[in-house]
Length: 215
Image (cartoon, rainbow, N blue to C red; front, top):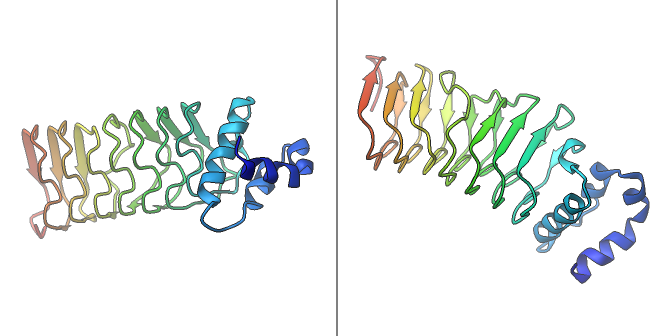
């Protein structure tokens, strides 16, 4: 335990005793140490058997980054907001299940999770830049058919094997770049930017369903 975390815990003993994790995370001071303190606090709580993500209204940046004990996270209806890197960079995470829906998922919110296989239940139609990027084992993200916007590198280097996009989608540059397991693509998007599907070396079948698409 770092001196920074020890001081923080001593200053907020009342919240810890109440197991008021939502208020506890809100007390983390902004600044250069905020992200490391967030991750260290989560690691400590999880090692004590807690699941703090069940209680948070806002999941803060680097919430589970570097936390080795977390294999699954459930985002409950209590959670109203995700921010950049909320659920990113967790070395052991295998699944994220949303019990509430979000129209938009922010930039980099779930990226760089090397073991994650499924991220389901979110209901999103807008995926921010690097949203799910660099999750090489990610094969289940729910249907993408209602996608309106797939941001820059939003699904880059994931393990998706089949992608179906409806006619309303805007697909940004590198959105699915280096998805080396992608075999089947059904593309109805009306705008696909440069390099959106570059280096998808396993791609076997491409079906274009929107004659007015701009590729």
